[in-house]
Structures are given as C-alpha cells and as structure tokens.
Image (tube, rainbow, N blue to C red):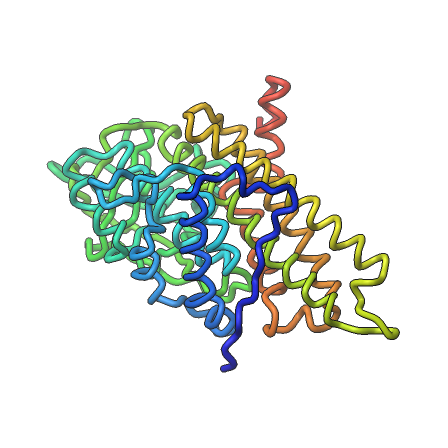
Length: 394
C-alpha cells in the first residue's frame, strides 16, 4: 500500500481566520495534523476494503473530538461550538465516516445523556465515551420509518424495575462496535423516551450492514431488540416526546454543516493542485477558461458556506440558534459539497475516479451525508414551513 502525503492547504479567500480566536485556530491545527498523520495515509485502503479503522476510536478520544462541548467534569473538553464545528470540518476533510463516528458519539450519544440524563447516568457513561474507551450509537431510524420518526414501532413495556424493549432500528452508524446505544422507543401510552441499552443485554444484537457504496470506512449496522430487559435506571429522565431525539439531531446537523464543508475544501484543493500540474495542449489545464470557471465557482460556494457556518456557530454559542437555521446550513453545505465533488472529479478527468485521489470517495460518502439526519428535501420543507407558517409534511 502506497502511503499518501496529505498536501492540503486551507482555502480562506475572505480572511475568515480573523473571525476565529487563537484557541479556535489551535484546535483546528491539532485536528488537521492528526488527519494528515493518521487518517489520510490509511483511509483509502480501509474504504476500498469496506473496513472500519477501529484504532481511530481511542485516537479521537485522546484528541478530544468526542463531546468537546461537554463540561470537563464529565470528561468533555468544555469548548465552544465553533471549536466543535472546526473539529468536524477537519475530520470530514479526511473522511465523512470518521466525522460520522465523532458526530454520533458527541451529538447523538453524549449530548442526550448530558442534557437529559440523571447524575448517575452522566457519571457512569460520559467519561468512558469521551475517552473512546466506549463507543456509542443512536437508535432512531427504523426499517419503515425514516423521515417520519413519530411513527416508530420500537416499544417497551413495564417489567418490575426493568422494562422489556422490542423492535429494530437501521442505518445506525457505529452500531457493530458500540458498547452503548441511546435508543428512542414508545412506552405503553405511546410516549417517546430515550433508553440507554448496553452491549451484553440479552436479546440485544447489532448486525452489520454490508454492501454499501458509501461511507465504506464507517461501521453501519442495525439494532435489534428481542425482549431486552433494560433497567428503569437506564431511561433518560429529563425528556419525553420527539423533542429528545430532534434536539440531538440539531446538534449533529450543526456538525454536519461544518463537516461537509471540509469534504468540499478537500476536493477543491485537490482539483486546484491537479489543474496547475496537469498539462494539455502545451499548458497547464488551470489556464483554460472552463477549468477556471469550475475552480472559481467552487471557491465562491466554499466561501459563502464558511460565512454561513461561522455565523451559525456564533448563534449556537449565544444560545440563540433555531433548529431551522441549523437545517438550512446542513442542507446548503451538503448540496454545495456534492456539486464541488462532481466538478472536481471532472477537472481530474479519468484520474478522478481512482483511489489515488480522495474525490470519488468523498463523492460517494456525500451521497449518504446529503440523506442522513434529514434529507435535502426534508430540510427544504423545514425552511419552507418556517417562512410560510404552513406545514407541507402532512
């Protein structure tokens, strides 16, 4: 296996670094160096083999990429949301699957335990999740219920000081390797609650999903519950209803808005470097009008998206953000990243489809990223409902 040298240079056409603190830049630099050293040299090989690089779980824990906004007393980093966004940007610049691993752990597992868990739950689970000793996953999507989670069938019934959990979840990142699953299910009255399900509970299994053309270096699977006895003390006491899982998704979508931008930056950077080096008709192809058009449009969209996610981070830090604003940024970053990948692939011609470059891998990954945690169309309707006041979902 040839070891790749990661030559990435960060595009900053509008001097946006001036909006960042020194701490923000240090956080970004440390994660960027980690990606260059540990992810870029190996990720193509893992993606080709459709294998999850398990060693990254401990590495991401040591880097502080799991739950960086969770307070230090629970093992988190106590950082702000712009720091979190920059971490996700750098991780996804390496690979969307690596960022997914961190997003799920921080936003979908640690956040609900921190926000809605008991003190005992926080002390038991958060430090081990933060360090990477434990990997977590999030069970919301079901085989027949994706965009409409309120119709979920997974349910639990009272059984003394336990409950009996039945049902199935699918498209679950991290599930084959997870020690902990935060699962959303309905009680006998039809109310939705979060339950912490632990590896080893009888009747709980996590079959791996095979045959993916996307997120090939990420572990995806199902969660299957066959009369799983879960202690009542594992039910999150602080929330009921869809507010619980949807608040987690808002945090995760924030990370995706930054993350997808990292994939776009990587494709732009690759295309720019290649266009300057590749010669046809006696000059570098960067000198041809249509290639310059592609590169100029890529950089324009990246710059607009950088401004959008930076402002979103400020609003998040000030606790002023709306889920609808996060929704718009998630959809925009995914859309421009997908288009930039396709244009970058064309700049590279046939070389763009090979594993020698990251573009085709990013392109395939983004087909998942544009769909999960709210599809492109669903996010458009969230914005549409917000600006018109009319619900188009029903």
